[in-house]
Image 1: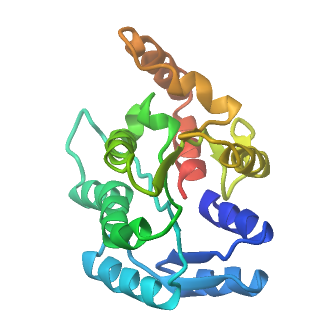
Image 2: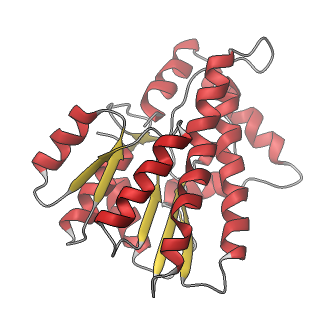
Length: 243
C-alpha cells in the first residue's frame, strides 16, 4: 500500500468523506470496496483535459468538498551527468509538479467559496536533500515545496489553508528495513494534521528538512555517498519510495 491510499483510509476511518483518484480503475474499485462509503474518480494528472473534466465532476457531485490532497508522484532513475531520457523527464514533471498545480488551479475557486478549506501538497525529504540518482524527482519536489510557499502566501487572506506533508523514506509497497514503517508514518502524520501547522514533519524527516543552508552540500554528499556505497541500494530506494 502506498502513502496516498493509506492516508485516505486513515481519514476515512476518522469519519471524513473521502474521494480518491487515480488512473487504474481496478485499484480504485478495490479500495472503495474495502472501505464502504468511500468514493473514487478516474484521473490522469498528466492530462490537463482529464484534470479539467474531473474537477467539474467533483464540484458537481461533491459540492461540500473542502479539502484537496495532492499526493500523486512517480520516481524514476535518471542520469544528471549524462543524457536524460525524455520520457522520464516529461512524465515525472507532469505528474509531480504540473499535476498538483493544475488540479489546485481547477478547484481553487470552489475551495475559496467554502468557510474553511485546505490544500495539502505532498513533497519529500528529497526536495531538501536530493538523491542524485533521481535528480528529476528531487527537483520536482523542491519546486513543489517553493510553489507551496508562494501558494500559502497568496491564499493567506482567504479561507484556504495550505499544508505541506514532507515524507521521509517510507515503506510504501515494500518492507525495506531502512525505511519508516508506513503505519507509523500515517499515525504520526494524522496526529500532526490535527494541530495548527503549515508543515507535517515526522521526526525522521526533520534532519533533512533542516538541511538547506550555506553548507547543505555536505549532507547531500554524505547521503549520496552512503546510498552509493552499494549499487543495489539505489534500486531499492527507488522502488520503495515511489507512490
